[in-house]
Length: 120
Image 1 (cartoon, rainbow, N blue to C red):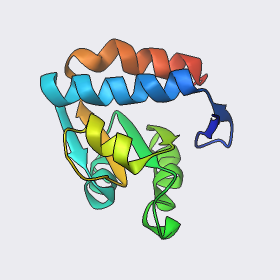
Image 2: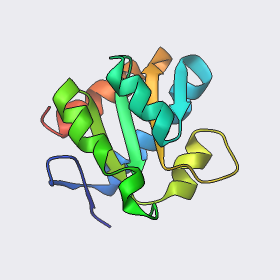
Image 3: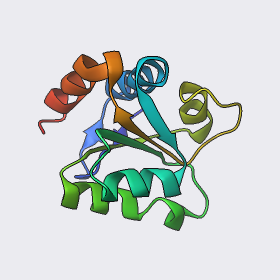
């Protein structure tokens, strides 16, 4: 399954898995923000290190602005296929439209690896 990143490039399943892993690690060793509004605030304040947003959000307008805002602020932004999986990686039982990592904790190397694979 191929997924698109903010530049419209295809993102491999391997990168999607790394994004979920980075969120899980940052959740336990750093700090994350959950939801589209929280992710937006983290990007605007310059706190976000990585933003992941779900492709299956309805309506799509909820997350449409995230890749554009991320690009303006130079934040790594990746679209993932499932809000349920995104929510699970963030440690919540419900799906979530977006997650921003604001303090990497031990996920720093994972984020660097994702960034390198996406050529950022």
